[in-house]
Length: 108
Image 1 (spheres, helix red, strand yellow):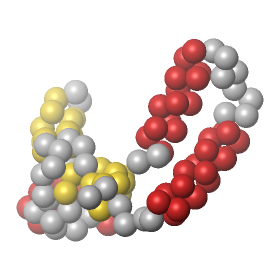
Image 2 (cartoon, one colour; image 1 turned 45 degrees about the vertical axis):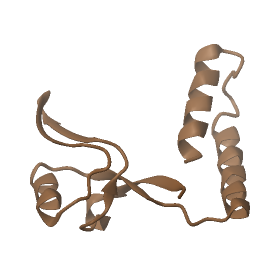
Image 3 (cartoon, helix red, strand yellow; image 1 turned 180 degrees about the horizontal axis):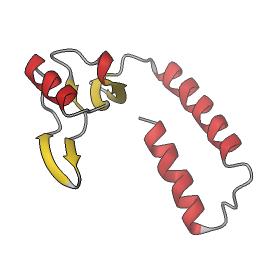
Image 4 (cartoon, helix red, strand yellow; image 1 turned 30 degrees about the horizontal axis):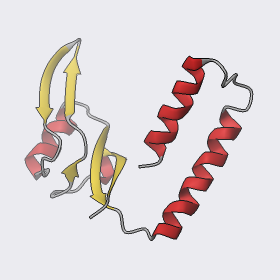
């Protein structure tokens, strides 16, 4: 089963969704709430996140896109990134690394 990671606002989170990445909420540099990747969210977890002013959560969900749809989405992503980085000097290793990292992230 292929999975897709999505960052969703807390208002779109529902009980039973599974975290795609660990969740850590800190206040003034002090961690006061954590949940591990792969954790299935409960109503209590969602309430605790809201009480601690969490805004977004990384959710792992089944990727139901066909290979053709995935390729089309990837082409759109590449086109958009090329537009964003159009004035950047990709010959610089740091800029090329950033481009590659953003492309890898957006390809999920």
